Length: 240
Ligand SMILES: [Zn+2]
Image 1 (tube, rainbow, N blue to C red):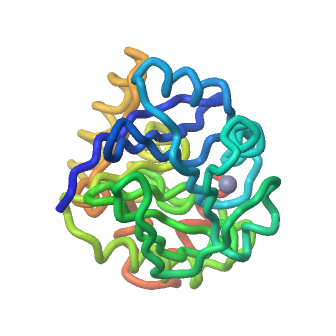
Image 2: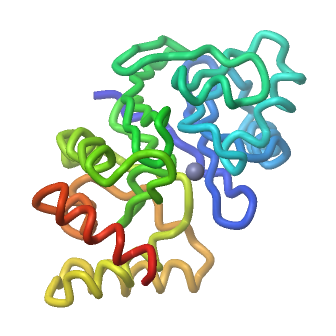
């Protein structure tokens, strides 16, 4: 499996955009919530932008799309059809399970509704970009779908390989692990990852990517036995 180079681009308060490096110094950007930090990262790395992948339409994921499109006349922008119409700019709507070859990379879209009805995850080689669906040790809020819908999306992502690198939309890991430690107080894996995440954050470092193996051990939402347990966890997290 391809192991593309992925560059984290911190945006806004706790968002991440990601540059995925393809062939010939070309890069794709996932969820550019701001144009300026993405532009700076491209310049610093000597990369040219070859496409934009939107996981969903929320402003803190697509805020930089229109500006980047203005600068690159032919830049392709992808989002699921349901969310594409809610994003400013010329967005190509895509559907579940579509593959697109961009910058020499095979981009595989997975429809994972729950946070929004058009939420997508993107698989590029061993890297998985989950937006606000699957967070490290957590799960996005159910703005448009119900718990059963989100649980089905988690089952789908949870079926991918252990070694899959998970890149999510926000630096929420430490807070999510505090909830995970409350939900599973006997878990050594959660306690250890919480201590690690606290130390990393204290040093100002990102806690991402995670891996699916780590998520299977520490993410209560991925570990939920069924949709009812998933729903109970999501409700508890809302008021945690
Ligand atoms: Zn969102």
